[in-house]
View (cartoon, rainbow, N blue to C red):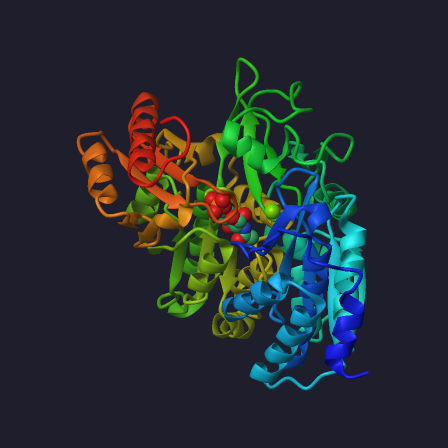
Length: 535
Ligand code: 16G
Ligand code: MG
């Protein structure tokens, strides 16, 4: 059967639901799970085409991350293990929105023609899913899409998003890429990083968000115990996915997640999100109910300190020219940015929100540390730097440790599990507990609000989302609201995942931050077509 006919025939069970207009957002497609079968089928075709184009393995992870359990979504994985290249996002939208089987077949033919792709196969696409009940059915739809172009889907079952990214990266490098290999690599490198140091001597409590992180951390935990790290897992699947728990809940409300009521104030705790690609450390505060957060900014600072310590210990001036950069977004707390600028002596870059932008920027350094305040992030090492460390590793423990760090911290994408090991190793090597980490700087109080507008695309931002270009006059009004607020800063941006405009404000006191956020939200409502009553 010729290709377009194969697509026509195979797509019949997966019609685009009436009125559904999927849009490739910041990190892929996301919607109520029942709507997504056609989207998954078409993503299967897309990633099969990507595999044919690159002659390498690609991946599909079915997850809606920190969204509620009835939602689902898809994250698409390049052969490098990174997110789908941005040039192909337009194809994703085109295929996902084709109105009929015939239109889809034509869109596929157009894509193959434009990219000069000879199909059918051979090739392989790895497919995994998180713990949502809709996962296996949606994975089957994606697999049907892959088969359309004559490639083999390889069903990997339940995995965290970063595990699938890691497997795609490793497979394409010809390296051992099974789940057991992932645990062995991480645990082995962690043991090396902490060799000769005292264990922190306290169990680490992990909020698993009732998601896929729970079984995966349980599988790894046994291998960490011999190196002196004991995990106690909470919210392991007995409650609602992301419901009253997980890193997103914690960051939004600074409330203790469920199942942490009895944990003593000061205890080292952390939380991952529903697909375990976001990490937040925290500890219960005295008085109950609230948590002190150690967010992505603070993790970035700790990571950069570890990297700088190791680089400064390299022999013979090898560390002198190493370019270390920290990449943040406008959401980075001003106190964190000040601390980095004043104390760490490395470059700081700000990019728009979304892992793909930070990740791209991090590649421009020998060592690029990137974290969003919400806990997405990793540390990327350039190939040239790692090759240099390989040469030095025989004579230099610091070089060997930098290599170990590059194994601990996922080189494909931000990974909460490897993030935990990096934080634990960094604290332990300094002999630090949470108090020393907290004492580095004090976060400026901040407030985030959402404003409903008729069309959020009416807000156009510039300078990495720190300023508004349109509607005209809004930025001047925001500037006027910020002027005179001690340590005041505010910006607005259209969300990439929700139909709202987001407002961020920070200031010297919580009252001032709240008042500034309110004032800016009113400005957005007035000048950008607010819907409903003014905030
Ligand atoms: C997605 C992004 C995250 C970003 C968030 C912003 C990835 C893997 N995830 O979750 O990086 O912080 O969107 O959401 O890129 P917003 O646009 O609704 O504020
Ligand atoms: Mg996530």
